Amino acid sequence: MAALLAWLANPANQALLVSLIENGITAGEKAYQTWELQSLNDLLAVVKADMTALAADVKQMDSDIDARDKQLEADLDKAGK
Amino acid sequence: MRSLLVALALVAGCAPTMNATLKTEATLAVTSSLVAHAVNGADALLEVKTRATMATDPAKARTAYEAYKPKIEKARLAVHTAQDVVTDAEAERAKIPTGGDASKFTAWLPALTEALAALQQAYADLKGLVQ
Image (cartoon, rainbow over all chains, first blue to last red; front, top):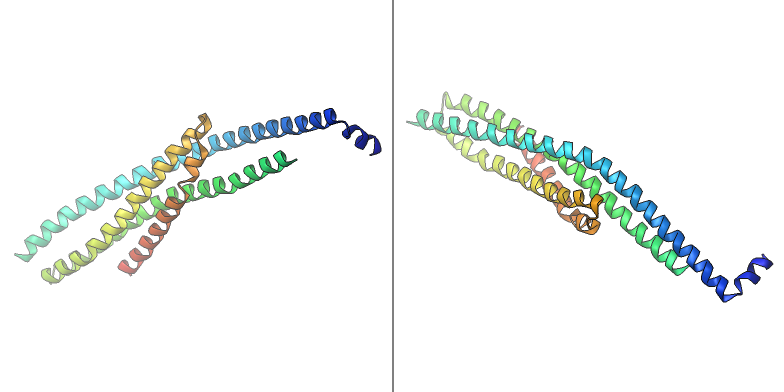
């Protein structure tokens, strides 16, 4: 500990330590971003499948309801006459 | 040390919002599909009931149809809105792996949350319609 403190007393060594920490932060940030991007890529594949299924389900909903409405309205008109 | 703390705070601050946005987006995509099926099913059930009434009382059937139709349309609109919101949010998220701005994606969290709440309300309304 005494040796470390003596080492740190030197301004040049202080600057070196800050640089090491900042480089560590940069490397750590890059590693986190790489992990985050890979996780996002993995999730992207799953969400893409959900989006495709959603589009199909909404299209089916619209198609079925529109067809049902058209027929029912025609039949209601006919029955009401 | 200060730079380290600032960097950690930035990372820690971003991660929960990204997680919340991803989770809400995925929930909305799945819930929208489920509610689309529910809307379609409710409409089909109400059509059967209307036709049963039409056989004996066409005027009553017409009145019932005109009463339930706007509610089905409201639920349908909630599904479409949810689909639009989740599609637009996903478009922003898809850009992130290739250098896109993550904050543009996380900015969608309020809209995603609102669309999810509207879907949940639509589902509750549908249950009231068919029971």
